[in-house]
Length: 396
Ligand SMILES: Cc1cc2nc3c(=O)[nH]c(=O)nc-3n(C[C@H](O)[C@H](O)[C@H](O)COP(=O)(O)OP(=O)(O)OC[C@H]3O[C@@H](n4cnc5c(N)ncnc54)[C@H](O)[C@@H]3O)c2cc1C
Image: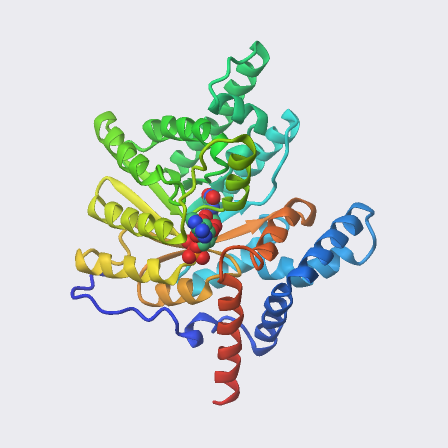
């Protein structure tokens, strides 16, 4: 489908955004976002829930399951995500499977995470509308190893062996993904791990992105060096003869990055202002669309202005809205205004569908709830949009 002539795409239509929710589901979501807006309550409840989960107090799992879990998580297991995936696919939305376990270090846990990603790749290949699996390298490697490799420390013999295992785990996943034509989005993480991740991902892109893009690197545009790095990655891809997968995010670790830089006395890698981040993010979108033949873009953002900008860029360049190299992505349970309206207008819209046991995904849930207090206004927007949709329905 090729749409010539640029038109403004309305991404604020709440009727389209929430058509998949019944009145009861919409009311429940309003309550959840309302409660998450109360910072101290989130703080108290998350600490309490952590303790109660540890003590295995009956009823706590069920309560989390019916509230935050239902809002932000696709299911405890891969098969439990099927219903969500099908509902999304019915509305033309693609799913990216995201295994939510974090912070494991023992080799046995890293192997288990590899196995879970491997199953996810096979599961994706057998389903309609699931072209992507997301991978966190910190689920395949201990963090201190990532930090030592990134810091170019001399590794012990033991560490060299462990690092080889990390590469093997990732290579095995990429190989399977390439054979089954499932794409892999590799997340970006804290800057002190990122050099090791970048090198590994470049190696995999070189191996597996020869004729189509299987592996995607993530670029965090809140870092002041990343726009230049995106361009140099692209130049490197051209000279080495592979295609670049570029998932663009602003970056999730702003406070942690600035605090660490301050404590350790080095200049923060993060832009000084939000405007600087926004400028680089949008410039990266322009760059990727200009070079769409060699770069497959995934705009992973809840920022409406950036999404609108990308819809205009695609139209100005007279590219098909559903070109395989032009993708938008939001998290399950958030940014429905963008995902559903983009899909309804013929763009490639994807949801990150997180799955995992409540214990595994609890840190992810707390992060979603914490964002309420943090630097984004996502949660007020999420709340306001749902309230206006409810009013629209009541006034019909
Ligand atoms: C599908 C998806 C996948 C993601 N994957 C990753 C990932 O792999 N790695 C990762 O790190 N994050 C990831 N994120 C999170 C992302 O980086 C952002 O934290 C989040 O999406 C909010 O940014 P935004 O673009 O949606 O919009 P906005 O709400 O417009 O932007 C908020 C962001 O702007 C930046 N910012 C805010 N204040 C300032 C300031 N004062 N100075 C400089 N910058 C500032 C921060 O990055 C902040 O998160 C992902 C998000 C999505 C939707």
